[in-house]
Image (cartoon, rainbow, N blue to C red):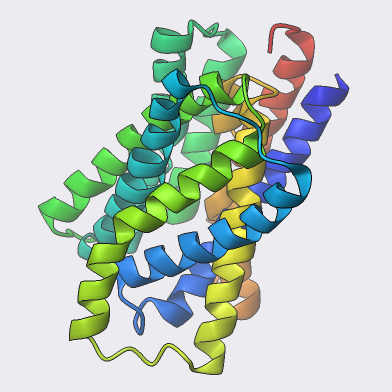
Length: 293
């Protein structure tokens, strides 16, 4: 059970940091284009992890397994996250966040179909509670939003969920630090052409102190640390159980928005928080009872 407890700590740190990303993004995305930020965060995260990896000596990847690293880097980190950012920009934020909260459902479905993970009553109850709590906190899908933004948000969820399931398989075979580092550099290469175009056509004041601090936080904490811990967690417990920690993101984002940005919080936040925490605790209790995870 020690392995499970460690994974739960990793997942709580990961999803909490991802939740803080929404707050930090408010300070930076209006001044730095999407793919420029994507390139910088993966480049910075890749360099940080590479330094650690060199000290620990990289694990050798079998030739036939490089395709999984490629899938994680291109589809998971570049296409999925890129589609999510564009979708959030084109659709309204609440709708994009609500769609993103569907990750636990799609991950559990893919994990069942591909990895043959058990679909237990506990998982179903936990998903329903957590997703309902997310819906309450976000306040539903207010506003119209452009259809392209909605479609891209849905595509992002499907790609990330499928990539998570693929990563679960490869993370059981190789060290998560090696996989994450290699995947980051693949995502860096993929985002470079669009970032170069943005940098040439948009006036970006990249060297302003608040932008530098924000990029460092996003690259080191919200990207390098979180994805390393996410991949490590996937090597320790079922992908479906990992996904049930996803709703912690909007919980933390709303709480930080209240503390740092002066955003209002009402009784719906409390109700949603209870459901999300209940869903996560249900996942933890269920995972402890099931030794297969």
